[in-house]
Image 1 (tube, one colour):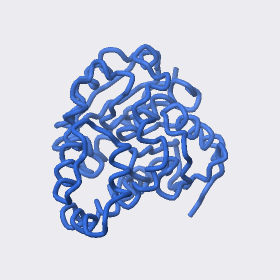
Image 2 (cartoon, rainbow, N blue to C red; image 1 turned 30 degrees about the vertical axis):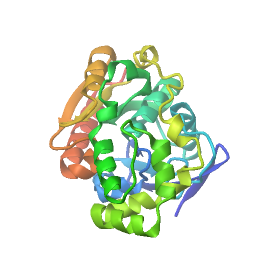
Image 3 (cartoon, rainbow, N blue to C red; image 1 turned 90 degrees about the vertical axis):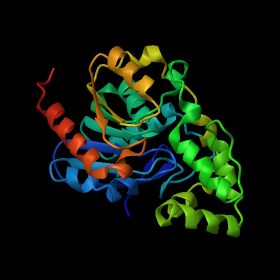
Length: 282
């Protein structure tokens, strides 16, 4: 499997297709396989050169003790972009992958033609977003872990989640596997490696991507928010404050559109990429 050394980091990536460059950025706790299971990489590679990669500490990319803020991960992307000799790309980012994509658009505008967001929460917009503690994904996780006798805090806390998974007994892990199913069991297996890193804290650092800096982004942005997203305040903010932003909704999804409605998500991404590609160049 191909790897590339960037920023002193061994990064795993996959690439397919020919044409304009599209780069896929997965959420924290996921890896690039989410794009394969959703069928997005295969669908887009018929028209574009598609690059997907594992963020540091995820999938087959190296784990480091620190370096998980959106600004640091944006620098990882920029170095990979250079190493792979990509052209200015369309970035598609799910959840925290969307935060990284937007930070890259701000810091490295020459590398980004446009951004398609999938239901991100931005630490820099925490003051306008009341629903993080009630995010349905976290509520579902708390209920699942309770079945295994593990209590997660009411507020979203990835550091505690990573440590809780690392400390699961074989019996607790088996209970979670039975409740969550094989796919979620594979997801759980990737979390203990993050327990000894700063990732859980870094996710919620503004890291310079303030509301004011977000508003400076001039590349076209498509904000794909899920029908039952907990982050609609963020969606409305982006629509009203970004210079060039179109909003669309993914039916039936609640923060995990690439896996909860892969066909609907893929259709929307293809539609908006085609629309962005047909726009006249500045």
